[in-house]
Length: 143
Image 1 (spheres, rainbow, N blue to C red):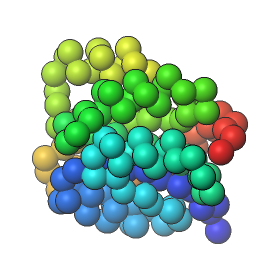
Image 2 (image 1 turned 90 degrees about the horizontal axis):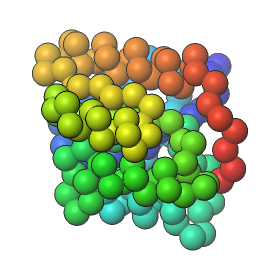
Image 3 (image 1 turned 120 degrees about the vertical axis):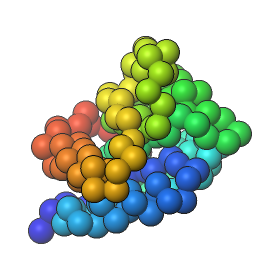
Image 4 (image 1 turned 90 degrees about the vertical axis):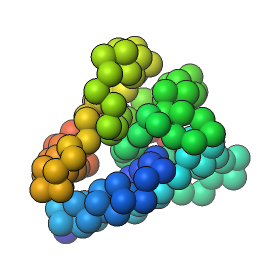
């Protein structure tokens, strides 16, 4: 049986959250999933003072978020010694070259444009999950 991973999804669109959860459920991977509906919730979760749960094994980060946008969330994660090595995949509808440049410049590990087609979206999420949660050897982290 696969080891349980923690996945943080930072996404404000409930339809995209539902599709992402559906795709991950079809992979056979076991994850603890935490959903942050905006940038403030993501920052609060990651930097909670009395943190009892481990840091996530993977963060799926949308760019267009309320309160704090995804690029600022990424900047804050990379600026903190405890979280700077967390694998972060930007998963967004933006195909703007400037967003890709800023995302990689701030240290995202991957930038994936969300497919609009339902089947393609499921396929992309499943492949991404298999790579980042099974094949990839993440850096050692302390929680």
